[in-house]
Amino acid sequence: MQQGTNTTYVQYTLLEGSAPIEMELKALVNYRDFHASTHAGDWRMRVDPVEHGVRVVAFDGAVPFYLKSAEADCEARHEWYRDCFLAAERERWAGRS
Image (cartoon, rainbow, N blue to C red; front, side):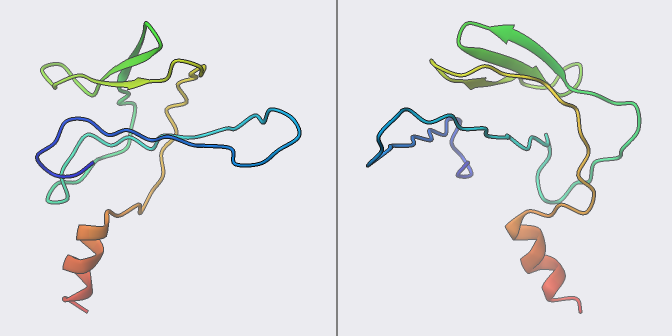
């Protein structure tokens, strides 16, 4: 998402093919800016089904966000990916080496 905006759209178009395709996509979600850190443990975001997607609430009081698709199914996984950095974090840490 571009900073200062609240919506991101992604569209895939099959340009050629002899049959429909099936895609599996994963959304990596972390409710923080690049100045903060996330601590692993038993914490889990709340993921509730809504029409055409899910509503995600990171913690009580957090602004909810939505992942939606008119033609997709969603499965919440709650998997942790350690040492995952945003592009802005790489730039910040590169200057400290």
